[in-house]
Length: 117
Length: 115
Image 1 (spheres, rainbow over the protein chains, first blue to last red):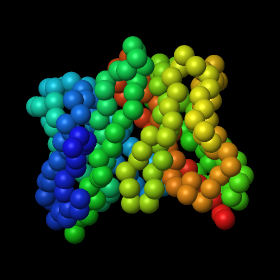
Image 2: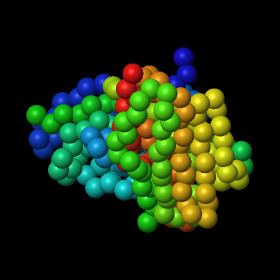
Image 3: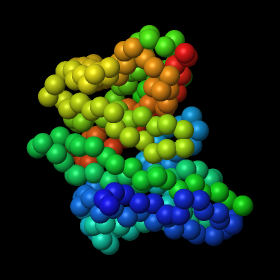
Image 4: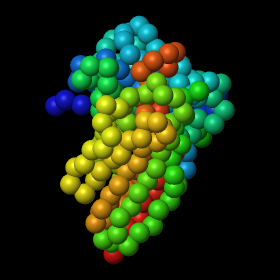
């Protein structure tokens, strides 16, 4: 069963703790992305990676960290430095480029809802 | 920097009417423009996309137009149905510079189709 899987679906964190969200894909995609979704603010890019062992900061990277040690996996750590971590987190993956230099469809995981308690 | 602006934030139409959502992007170094639909509690899913080498693409009741000179693209839904009610996102993928490969989304449009 091919796809992109995020776990867990719901996650609760105490203030001051780091927590890691999992994202795994078996689509053989090179590119992977992490987005944060808050009501009324759309999908904001946290980090993205186009190849193993390389990643770039998105628009709201502060308080987050990632790693890309394997093509299939792109875990996101929400650190204690993130002041307002309660949100819905979405991971996505895509072929890096399709049809020459053009982009191609990004597939999303089902998301992880993180709540700070 | 790379930015995608989407309007309107909410759109309410009667069943059978057309709906239009517009997006602008900040940098000409972008050549791929997808549109996603997100139903309540679900993941976003691609409904249509367009590449910068074409100006228009149509798929049944859905069409997308691209104006590269003006840096804007639009989603058109005709003969709307209640099941079209959802949040719609536009996006742009950057293909040059320090943001090579970056996929940026608009703020989303909540579309409500009244029966």
